Image: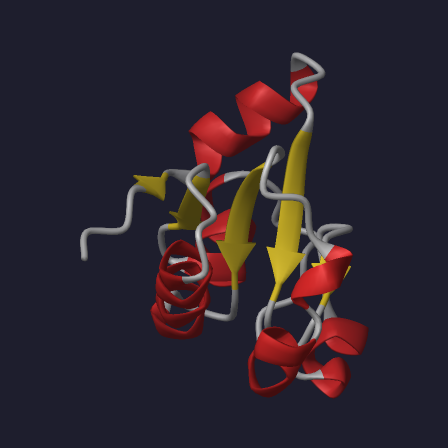
Length: 106
């Protein structure tokens, strides 16, 4: 299954244009407390039982620290029938490096 990826700069541009994207942060709570970009936190181990918090009609962008957990989350969502899913390439580290240096890396 191929997961579409979005670059940090493209995500920033789309958010700035007011697009209704649902940012799904699948890191652990302690990671989210260190740094986040305002996404909805559902840690990856909890995702399958919390799908009711998501709308299959909304475009969802998954993100994690560097990418792999976001890809796993996107794959799970696709398998559960979510069609409009992509992953933030490079995760929150890419966001910090290329969009907002104030977002802490850890």
